[in-house]
Image (cartoon, rainbow, N blue to C red; front, top):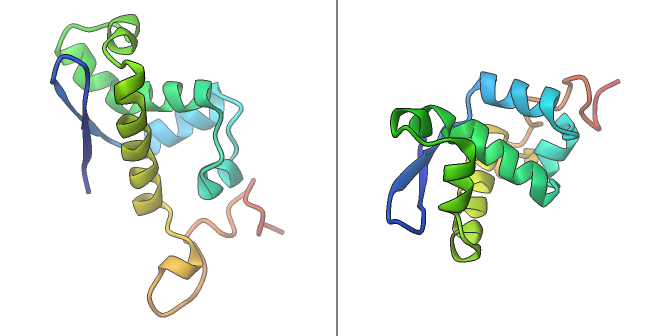
Length: 116
């Protein structure tokens, strides 16, 4: 599933949450797996994860992180943040969101609130 948003120049960005992006977010920010599942992330970390998720596209467009951040004004940060949240939700559904019940696929993962 690909969720998109546009920057202030009208360029469309596709949020790509891969294992590499998630691993990088866990290692380069103060985000924990529980934070990802609960979607409780500080704005500075949202910006970092957003960058990690579009970095390949930005490099293809010959844009640096600073260029990308300059293209995301306060008007776009809401839609970009919502696109990121939607991507997280699709990647890590909660037990309540899953048909047939059960737990999130990451419920037993280290750092998860449900982990032993």
